[in-house]
Length: 135
Image (cartoon, rainbow, N blue to C red; front, side, top):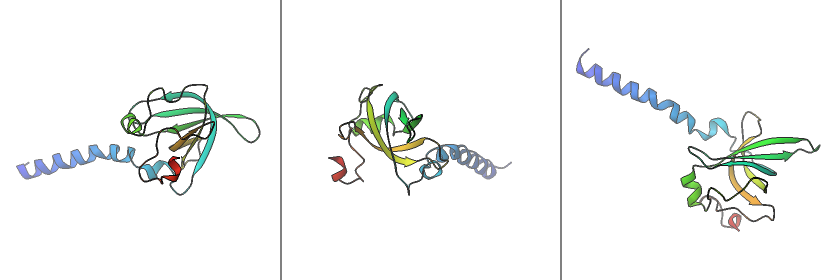
């Protein structure tokens, strides 16, 4: 194999290795950005970790049955810039999480915003959101 082919093979190998990371960060693959969902429940767990945080909520459906919902957040560094800390929410606290639902219909969403039981916004939403929503 000559030098040109070796470089081409190395470039293709590196490009191929990056595809899983690209797929991992493809929002549209996992979440439906044309729909919105809001769930209110009791925090079971808050994982403030990379690459994405996770909030696990106990939610009651219309018939009073308990369900577990998971809300994926941004990374801790982004969350910190939006006013969140490791202890911003605690197990036992009732919150409402708003976001984009999972495409597969599971009880999973990508969080856009969260509010305390009194309606107070937790942290700040992304700069792309309106100022009205940050009140």
